[in-house]
Length: 174
Image 1 (cartoon, rainbow, N blue to C red):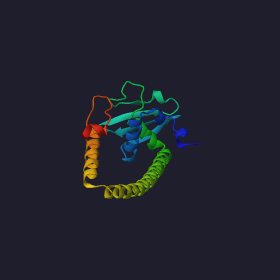
Image 2 (cartoon, one colour; image 1 turned 90 degrees about the vertical axis):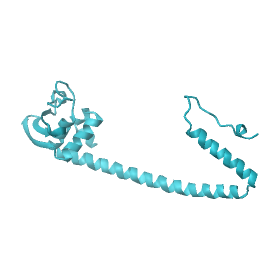
Image 3 (cartoon, rainbow, N blue to C red; image 1 turned 60 degrees about the horizontal axis):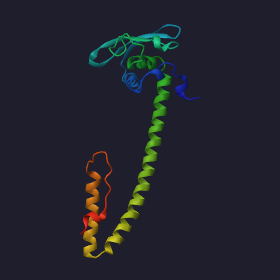
Image 4 (tube, helix red, strand yellow; image 1 turned 90 degrees about the horizontal axis):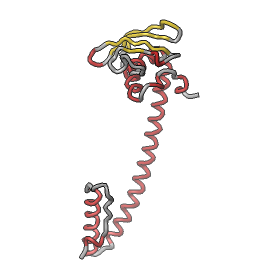
């Protein structure tokens, strides 16, 4: 079972509200909180520009949760302040989410390091191949290859009008 299966309220938040709410929780923006009923919690959350919002979250009926912030006031949405209050009361879930994210970050970093090692190896091989090819060219052949390469670079960076521009080497030599 994943930590995400246990999160009853915050999975309804947008990605932005979820991430910002977790950030608010981590930065201790929740000023206070208390349980006021079965699955119902209230608290005050410090928002942007020193605003303080009154937040009520209902774990069993998330759409009944309320916040006085401009984003959520009068709407049935889950805002970042609700997410922060949720994690204030369920800090073990916040820790589990953060641990999962850290694990994903480390896995991504490992994948990138493996990719980079492969890239550097293939780049070195390609450099050796290109160097050997260039060393076998005479001066005119070298000049032609340089012109072709520079024109391919120009063509690849030149903005087109949504049509693909196909490079034809014959266009550059008379």
